[in-house]
Image (cartoon, rainbow, N blue to C red; front, side, top):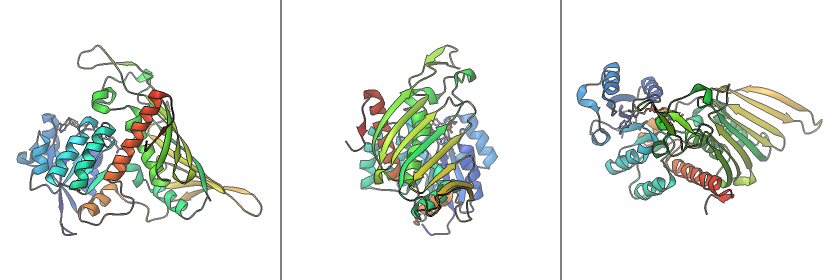
Length: 355
Ligand SMILES: NC(=O)c1ccc[n+]([C@@H]2O[C@H](COP(=O)([O-])OP(=O)(O)OC[C@H]3O[C@@H](n4cnc5c(N)ncnc54)[C@H](O)[C@@H]3O)[C@@H](O)[C@H]2O)c1
């Protein structure tokens, strides 16, 4: 595809997260929203009217949109049990895709896809959006400049409160194991794993605990209580590349937290802390080598670290893959770590990632 050509995007799944993607598409001149797909017909036509998309480009079935010759690239924001199907169809029809996380429902699906992808690869980005928080990108640069010396350990948290019992959140697809795979782990933990892989490197082993605090939730369709089989909480210790060790906690039961993903990296001469809620600042503590005085500073992220997620997707589709873009391999590796965390939580044993 030529570099300046407008990329006609087909959006699959028009629910909550689609609003963010519609806004991002509207911000980029090179992307044009051209086709829509959702099984919810009312929503499909509502969004179709809002976006000025003709009825002939509103689909209630995804393969027709994916193989439409007027669609150059796909953005997929469907529930987790459909991620593998969308990816498989995009590989089959050789359509570039930006696929939301978690990569797949489980690692078996990721392995199945990997076999197909290796034979006929496509441009593929996975929605690990925290790579696009300026503070996270700047932290990576500071680490590469060895600002805090040898990194020894890290703490990663991703806290939300929406699942706390007091809110009585009904039984949504996010609590249905067959549709979501895991709870807080795949939803939020997948981002924690990606942030660690982005900033530090590959996982070597994990040792995990998972808990379901709210064991049943009211099904809005039937009005009766429905058993919840996925976690509200997951924590794990991990060994990563370069002898870094880490502790990771995610929960949907952290009253006071809205959407709090933060990473602290401890090096021999300093500490770096980033929090997605303060996207333009990095907190850094450094020890002066002569006086052994510690200074604490808040660094404003310099210009040049702001990059919109779909800018990288646009570049990928036009054959200019950017350094650090979360790609198919990142999705696959992420899913493998998720699988090992579940194994560890179930067996009570530490599990090597490549066992
Ligand atoms: N990167 C992030 O930070 C982030 C944030 C939120 C959600 N997500 C991911 O986005 C995905 C969707 O989440 P959401 O909150 O938007 O969910 P949602 O339930 O609000 O929306 C999902 C939409 O998909 C539609 N859908 C279901 N089956 C379909 C099918 N067969 N074909 C076409 N459309 C279908 C539903 O009707 C719904 O409109 C999830 O995988 C989630 O993990 C990522």
